[in-house]
Image (cartoon, rainbow, N blue to C red; front, side):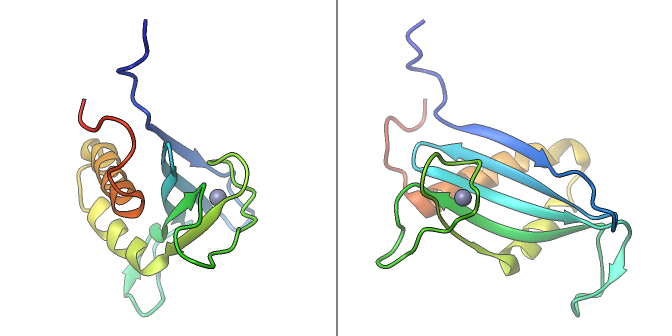
Length: 139
Ligand SMILES: [Zn+2]
């Protein structure tokens, strides 16, 4: 058992307890050597017409972002995000606009294909954010 072939990446799904409003947040997160990428979804109690987007929900894309162990650009400050994904300081950034696009694609898929799509998309996002560097790619 050398462990050399063990993936450096771990995929997590975390759901917060439902709020009194009936909303809850769901995080889909891929954690790798350089940090984590996340897709955060807001689950509404019902479909609503909002944000100028027409009929949306109950799942609304809220954030596509990353939690990095190192700054990703000059001057990026540490965000105190009480980060459960990286140990120590976290450099965070994200986009709600992109999350809306992700949600549209994700929830147009059959339920049985959603996790696989998330794993692939988060891995691509990781590569886009952190680059393909690190140890051996493609086992
Ligand atoms: Zn963080």
